[in-house]
Amino acid sequence: MMWGQLAIKAALSGVVIAAASELARRNVGWGGFVASLPLTTLLALAWLWRDAPDPARAADFMTGTALYVIAALPSFLVIALALRRGTGLPLALAAGSATAIGGYLVLMWLGRRFGLPV
Image (cartoon, rainbow, N blue to C red):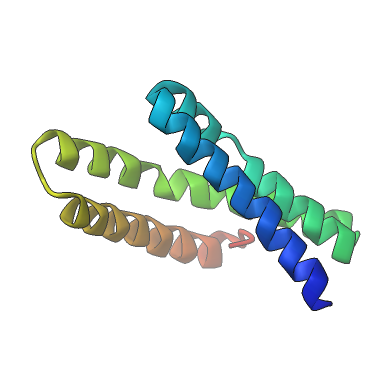
């Protein structure tokens, strides 16, 4: 892959993140909505398809992404609950990250056991 293509991918992906954070400053509900959209996943799928247009690979990518999202969902709740209880942001993020890692480890174990694309 050429460096210019990589730079374009990074810039477009960064725009999505910047848009979500700027919108959240004005309206947390809309910011959360934009952050929850599968924009990053769809961009990654587009880049994957552009580089290797393989339907089976793209389907496995989407299946794996959906499974990892499910595994990570509890981490968002842990962070929200910790912040509501007065925990500082660094500790809340650490607790949420630990929860996500736990979910990922369980998913990877299940993936090996059931042949999931994770």
